[in-house]
Amino acid sequence: MSNAKYSDVPVQAEKHQKSETKEAAAASSQRVASIDALRGFDMFFITGGSALVIGICAALGHPKAWLAVQMKHVDWIGLAQHDTIFPLFLFLAGASWPFSLAAQQKRGRSTPAIQLKLLARAAALFLIGLSFGGILKFNPDFRLPSILGFIGLSWGVAATLSMYVKKSWKLLATAAVFLAGCYLMQHFCLAPGAPEGANPYVVENNIAAYWDRTLWPNHLYLKGKYDPESFFSLPCGAAIALFGVLAGRLLKRQDGPSPARKSLLLAAWAAAAALAACVFEFGFGNPVIKKLGTPSYFLYASAYSLAMLALFHWIVDVLGWKRWTVAFAPVGKNSILAYVLMMMGVSGTIQKFLFSGLCKWADKWGQALAGLTSYLVVWAILYFLMRKKIFIKV
Image (cartoon, rainbow, N blue to C red; front, side, top):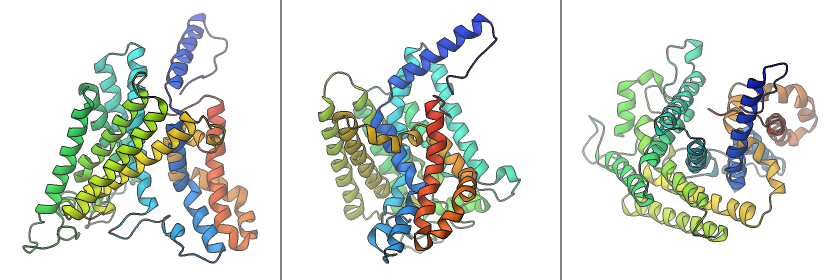
């Protein structure tokens, strides 16, 4: 958090404040506007955007339209837009890391200190995830894996590797090894007791789901069955975070490719990731299943993430069209806080207090209006904090 107000304090405190302000300004100058905008766009769908789209389709008499279907997770095999939200966030966490690392190094922070802070961030995300899983309610069946925990641990692995592995091709090779290892485990290792030749991508036969059921059966999203953020999918999560790190390194480069060429390179990388996903899905028989965290799923999600970053970078950073990003940037700059406000029910309570009557009056457009106002509540809170230069970071 930055720019706290001090008054009636010694001069030493004032100097400390100026130092903090300079650090905040240096970090801010390192930000890429397209990354903040894209992160906010990603968060838009879980803070009201999906309900807005579904509500519009329903009000127009097409509740099962293609666009409405994209706002929900697929049942098992396949990929919808809603399935890309969490991996895109993880990808962008990786993309932001080279800028954060450079800012810390510029301030003279040592590698061990950066590593310690990195581990603390990963642990904090994991603990916040545990709190949402019910551990603070002393629920004996609290959920152990979580979205935030998965993001924290995957990002932590990718960020740590990037600190010590300077060659980008080595990071790419590491990501490939992670994906290949997950594929070999999922495709060729059956759960004990499964008949020979059984489909390994059925929950009962899947080895990762079996380990989840064996090690912590009462601490899963679906108790006794599986968890979509299983720890055994973490290598795939680290892979997409590494792809994000590579994208961030490209955007951070001051020499070499021009901004326009960077966008084209990101688009080319997206095509390569999509091709790799097709090889895994159709060549290796690895179906796209988010709930099992298959490599093909993470590769398609990587392709989507790279393509979206290429598009946003082209529009925002190359063409310079930035005014419209105010619709998403405040949420993108305080994304963890946006998620916490939603999960704790703070934004929902405010939305109901202010707009429940209006939504009821809107009749068939009520769901769409509820989605829009839910996002606007989150946006307004975070816009206020952005204007005050207050950014909550884990």
